[in-house]
Image (tube, rainbow, N blue to C red; front, side, top):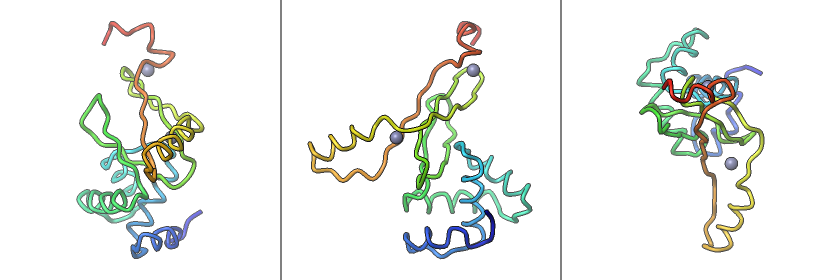
Length: 146
Ligand SMILES: [Zn+2]
Ligand SMILES: [Zn+2]
């Protein structure tokens, strides 16, 4: 899956023009399958020989977050925001606070809860984010080491 207009239709639903940079950025997020920081995205785009600046990456991310195509989550353990696609394969992640590995978890336990909120508050839920922190299998015996 490549080609510079892969996300043309998606972008159109947000009244956004399909540009080389937006497409490349969305494609990189999709291929990653894990949330990335803006810096990581920037490096991956460089590896693909996409000529883009870090400030452009930030600017495009802001636009995509505004339109709901990308979800930004702030890690409790650091000050770097992570970005991931919101449009499909919705799932959540476990973050190991020791080795910093991120483990994707299939599926979402919150669908019923969203429905309950919709019923109770008359609120139209368009999304949520949920990040789970803790110690992975490898790290759980070393909690005291930091
Ligand atoms: Zn770990
Ligand atoms: Zn969910």
